[in-house]
Image (cartoon, rainbow, N blue to C red):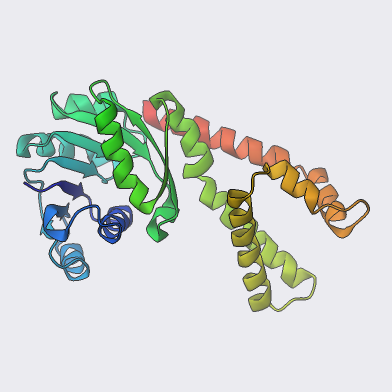
Length: 263
């Protein structure tokens, strides 16, 4: 029996498979990936020797659903027919109730919202249980996503907010990085120099925030001398409404996630 079958061999499915192998979650022969496209199957088989690469779901102890939301229902029916005990879904906006209905009962369902940094092992994911999922099922799901980042546990009703914050969050930060690079060019730096400095500043600041016992506001205050350059820059950001814009962005993305889930 395959221990885990990843149904969907796209970027996120591939990232999770690579993370599980790197973490030693299971040996290759206990993992499988299902991919419809023949060319993509060939690439996955070459990248992951020993992992079964299939064109349709087979019997497995657990399945990870990593397909487009529009394909989730039909794929769940195929998974149920093949036989599985548990399902972890990363199909955006598809509720546990919809997944359970498509599976036909008897399968514990956990729904997750990961984000794209999972492809480099630095993802942020949230998981929420379905009606029949117990603590062991949540532990199982968390162990999978732990391989590619950090995992938090929430109620399903909070997953839209997770989408608005961390699911869409990488795009917000990419926009900040893009703006910092352009600003560096504006004030006279070569573009390649501005890019190195901007990327490392974001990376280093995140590492400092993660390792510090201080909150973000305290760290910001610590580098803001009265009347200094940082104070001048922060004044310009506040005058430009950056704080309010970030709040509005997360709120708008959360609401859009709710709308898509009801469609």
